[in-house]
Image (cartoon, rainbow, N blue to C red; front, side):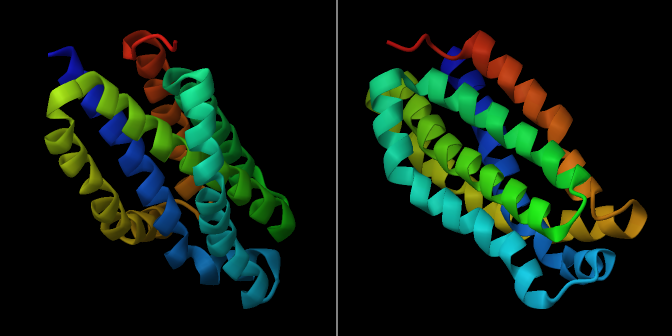
Length: 183
């Protein structure tokens, strides 16, 4: 039973990372206008996130094995949530790009550590759990632009980052309380 709760927490986390990766796609025109900048710089808001999340994957896997999946998960969620606040408060496009890159580092590390946690808690049943787990990211990629459009239309482009704050704190607390201790 506890394994399924842990699966739920990691699934919510992975969904949050996927949604946030793609949520900015619909915000390009608004961000470009807000900061009076060009599309090349605004493109780095999207590209920087995925570049950093991809580059950090091998390192995050090694750190997760060495320092424990729970520790890396919690640090990564903390980094992602703090960077989300930085994105929402960004005074210019350069600060936004930098914070998005930090978000990407957190997101990449979370993906690997969360996958490791799921693998560990399901043991012999890990194939089924990881199969289900791998279907979450594509769903977030589909939902991200839709959620982003609603937030931008009814609130502001900054809301696409602030929405991560309460969810980030919740999964941080749940991960701390529920995940098995790091070895």
